[in-house]
Amino acid sequence: MSGMADKPASARLLLLAILAGTAMASNYVLQPVLPEVARSFPASPWITSLAAGAGPLGYMLGLVLLVPLGDGLSIRTLVAVQAVALAAVLALAAVTTIEPLFLAALLLGGMASRVTAHCIALAGRVRPEAQGRAVGTVVMGVSAGILAGRVLSGALATSFGWRAPLAMIAGLTALGGFGIVLAVPTMPASDTLMRVPDLLLAVPKAHASNPELRRATLVGCC
Image (cartoon, rainbow, N blue to C red; front, side):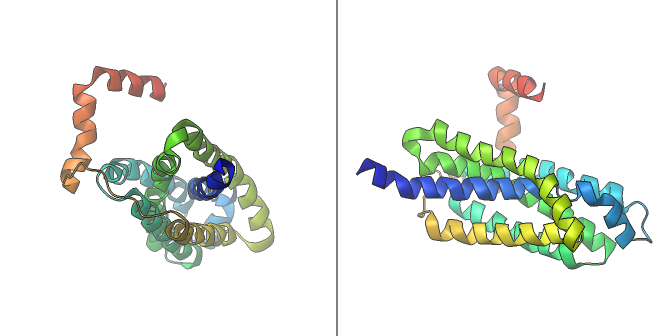
């Protein structure tokens, strides 16, 4: 019976791992095809540099602005909303020919790709009796996304053009977001009721007051 009971949880973990890996891959799919991107925007020779940096910059902004929200809002809702938002902006990047709009979509996509952090947090709640294994499963999905993003991008772009990988990831993340709504049961938000500004300030305050956290941050950075 326990094996049968584990099957839904395992399927949810697999869904989270795929969504996290796909979201992470969105920051890497343009790297192998930047020359093709430049040829699509001949009037903007600087487009490749900004296109390469927009996703990672957005990712860092997502760390600051979006990740702390998981401590006070429904983590399941955050995952689903960010996945659908990521799909929307990637679809926009895949079709637009307007340079500022293209770069803005990549920047917002980088922010939304930080849904990976909330997927990892949600994994621990899906399997609370085996949190370490659950988190490890989703982290493996993130690692796979980092590695596969470049490879699949090059293969797709060769046959269908550089916009195809963006469109593919947009579709996959949209499916993942709706899959989370359908497959993962509603979970209550944290008992800690905090306003959004307080949530955003909680991380730097904790860092300033906790020497162990500062040391762990330094070790992780190294």
